[in-house]
Amino acid sequence: MTELLVRLFISNKDEVQDSKVRTAYGVLASIVGICLNIVLFAVKLTAGLLLNSISVMADAFNNLSDAASSVISFVGVKLAGRPADAEHPFGHGRYEYIAALAVSFLVLQVGLSCLKSAVGKIFRPERVEFQPVIILVLAVTILLKLWLAFFNRKLGRRINSKVMQATAADATGDVLVTGATVLSLIIGKYSGLAVDGYMGAVVSVVVVAAGIGIAKDTLKPLLGEAVTPEVYELLTKKVESYDGILGTHDLIVHNYGPTHSMATIHAEVPNDVGIETAHALIDRIERETLHDLDIFLVIHMDPVEVRDKAVGACKLRVAELVCELEPAASIHDFRMVKGEKRITLIFDLVVPYSYEPESERELLERVSARLEQEDPRYECVINIENSFVRAEN
Image (tube, rainbow, N blue to C red; front, side):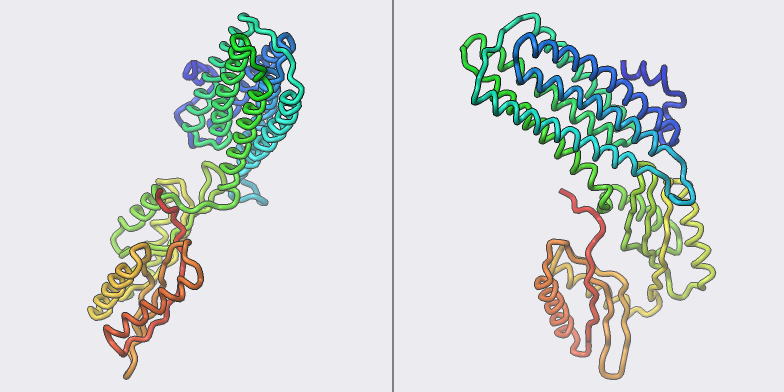
């Protein structure tokens, strides 16, 4: 069914990096979500009124909020698909994240409202009428929501859409919610226990949790995320694959939407290469990265000593020593300034974010002390940095 809808309504369906194709996917998912959730709302509200069940009605209004969420998603996807302009040279892709954040607040509002009603039902329980036909209707809605979750998850992964992936997670939560509602009806029928209010509270908590989860997921790219290990490896391997690049560090990726990224990186080049030659190489890497990976890359050149073997050996020893003291740390931008009585070692030391200022000072002192033991002439000038790469779990 999913592929049939895609073939019917999306031309060039495989060109998912094309903004028009991506917008078409978002519009299709939104319209399907609006239509299906309105149908589910009407069915569940009718069932809730007939059963006099607050949990069923809470579930129904959750579906109505899902329909409103799909409307917001529709608007967000359309706005995100607008091309770059003078005021927004990196496009409008972040509108999609803003739409997902709006969806999360709507879900939270519905969940809290239903929780209030459920608590009232716990203290003032009412008899819920059991009707097999209504149970059958709710079972059908579970199947429809399962399909909607699968539909949004599949398309969301295909185009890397935060909104659609959040909608899929919300639909999965709805499946659990409706399942709990059916369970409360069955328990009430065969045990006589008034569990409707308690199940309604569970339903509401699940809805609230879904809203919080969506908000957290969409705030991450808006606030700025660390580079994933996959993107880090992709970009560093790309840059370091060119002859004349000795290494890279300080990779930062700025996200302006699922399909728009800008990155900066420091590339190490031999210090005996002419500035014009190195500049031509950097320009070539930037152009080819944009063409091959669709990432706007800006490269800062760092000259590296390649002829002085003593400098190379000292850099290697400093890196080994730092690794011994803190395996999660690393160094870059190493320089050695030789004087008559002192040798100044200048480098950047990258430490984990878990380090507090006191831990940083302690590590600095330990590194400096160990290097002075190696050679009393060593004097260290160390700049502490944090990595921009996301730590692997």
